[in-house]
Length: 66
Image 1 (cartoon, helix red, strand yellow):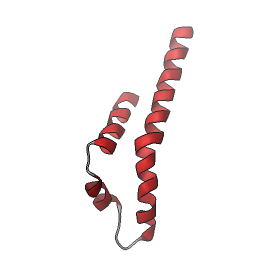
Image 2: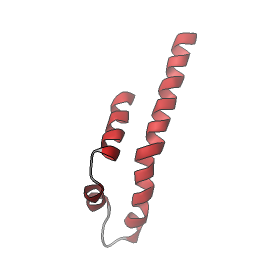
Image 3: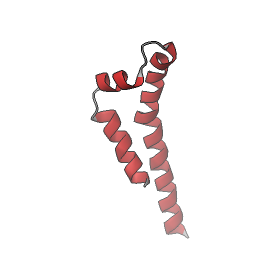
Image 4: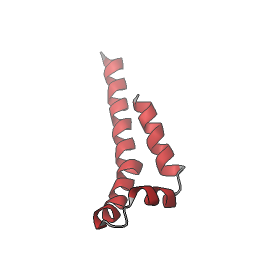
């Protein structure tokens, strides 16, 4: 499951064009969604994949050491 989520994050951040994501995410009537888009993009592109890789590495280390 973590590998699937990692692949999903990478697909969203690398394969889908920014215009389509902005059109889906940003509501023209709300300034909040316009400001949050850049944060959401960073979380999906950097934070979530990094956390998944760290968790997988810790799980593998724990598996092989015990």
